[in-house]
Every structure is written in structure tokens, then in C-alpha cells.
Length: 191
Ligand code: PAN
Ligand code: ZN
Image 1 (cartoon, rainbow, N blue to C red):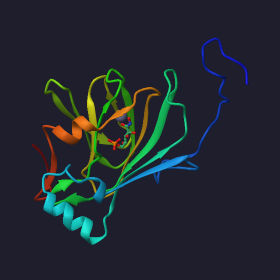
Image 2 (image 1 turned 60 degrees about the horizontal axis):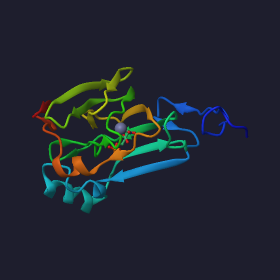
Image 3 (image 1 turned 90 degrees about the vertical axis):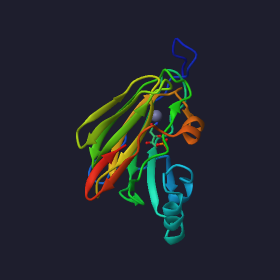
């Protein structure tokens, strides 16, 4: 190992296989799994969530990651696989977060499924960008973000964001988003 002309050690280049159809990363270093029981407090209908937890506590989403130093200059990447399902009539979603260093952006390239990226700012703006296969969503600095699956198959995205971004879940856990996504009478409702 030699020093680069900054404070970091030289890291060896590497590559990884990603199965775009299945939405999995071969040989991830870490797989984060969030089940219904990890989502208490997030959905509009807590009783419907308790029912789901009591049934088989289904997996809501999985995040496949490679181990990359969480440092300025690095890029963190993952496959986010959000399963289809409803809590009552509300679509399965990720917890959502701001980045701890809030002025850091993120790219989500959707490789399968359909849904929305809900984004909000601290001053009350809220936007729902459609997610579908081959569509890229740019999450600008300072926007909290949560993906929502409105379809019947997994919503799968390849995500890239700065190594030092960090995750701040607390604000969203307390405040939520101004909008939620439902399926009612077979139609998407955002309200
Ligand atoms: C994504 C998310 C992933 C899971 O990698 O972490 O989709 O969502 P939550 O982190 O909100 O549970 C990302 O935005 N990283 O910054
Ligand atoms: Zn993020």
C-alpha cells in the first residue's frame, strides 16, 4: 500500500456482478433486511401493520452493500430491493432519511418495478418522482428521500451517494413525509 497525495491509502480497484433481473448483488459484504416489525410508527394504519407483523412479519426491503470506507471522496453504492405489498391500503415503503451531511446528493437508477421516490425539504416542499425500469432519479442535496412500491413486483434500484453522507433517520421517524402513497380501487392515490 502506498500513500496517494492525500491522507488516504491507495485502495485497489474492484468490480462486482449485479443481477439486474433479480435485483441482487453477487457476494455483497452486507445485506440489511427490514421487516414489517422494523417499520412501527411509519404507516398511517398502525393496526394494519400489527396484523402483518402477527401474520408472518414480511420483509419490506433489503439493501445489498459492498464495504466501502465512509469517507469524503468515496462513493457508497447499494442495491435497494423494496418488496411489493400494502399496509392497509398504503404501499410498502422504505423508512426514508436525510443524509447526516445534508448537502449530499444521491442517484437512484431504477432497474425493475414501479413506484415513486418521495422527497421533501425541511422547509416543506414535497415531490413524488416516478420510478420505473431504466429511469434515474436525482435526489438533490438537502432532500429527504423514501422509495415507495406501487406495483406487484420488487422495486429495485441501484443507488450511489457520497461516502461521508451518513443517514439521519430521526427527523423522518418523528415527522414523516407530507404525502403518502395508497392504492385504492386499483388506482394510485398520493395524498
Ligand atoms: C438508500 C437507502 C435504501 C433503504 O441506499 O438507504 O433504499 O432506505 P432507508 O435507508 O431509508 O431505510 C439510500 O438512500 N442511501 O443513502
Ligand atoms: Zn440516501
